[in-house]
Image 1 (cartoon, one colour):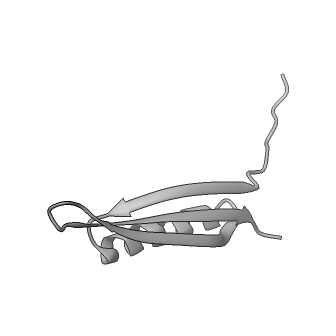
Image 2 (cartoon, one colour):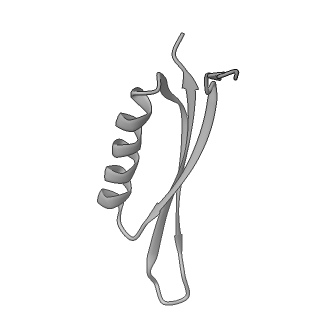
Length: 68
């Protein structure tokens, strides 16, 4: 029986929330989780969109890469 452990080198995660504080909390929690598997933030992209009722939806895409 062979057991193989592959290192995750790249990971992209998507987040969304109704307010900026909640979005920031979600992203920060995931950053802490990914540190445990040796991934650090490589790039962050974020945006806000407004629906027809004027409600805002905040979203973020975070690209994690292996620490070197």
